[in-house]
Length: 248
Image (cartoon, rainbow, N blue to C red; front, side):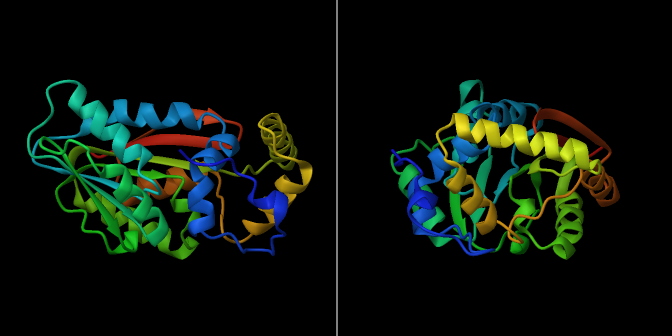
């Protein structure tokens, strides 16, 4: 069980200093649940969505898997009914501390029907051939802007027909007034979760130029340019959205 996130109560944060290091890993489940409204719903729903798209003898990619909550959700959902044969889940993260935590979570997991492989690597080096379902769960926003198009093009090219990508991102808005309202409402949520004004300000400063948001229109245009035939938004709470992008 993770401990409560109080990292920015006790330490200052320089601009752009946020890292997925051992300190963050220790509090990550609490941090993301108290920072991303609806996260506790997103994780099991991605598992349910996987049942619509995962095909026999294929690979599921969880890209930027952190501690593997989504990988484990997909594993559980697929096993709930008759699991498709020959499926393996590849959970990739470039943080050694995150992957170590995932490996510990996998100890004792029944992988006889569906295996879960924890992989410490740059997700851009992934082989997407034979993939039927992929997840970028608040991951793309941490990737350099000029690397995002190529990643999604490669992913769509490797995806099987009828496969899908779940993309979840924090977004921004073209209308300054809308952006301001939704930012205020998100901060209200964080206050409700017990974060102080100082903690909110420090974390926001730490994430500056590390988490780079884009508009929904930009995400949709990129997905369509990559070759996805259908893009459906299925979740939104404040500036946090998730889409299913399907390959014909």
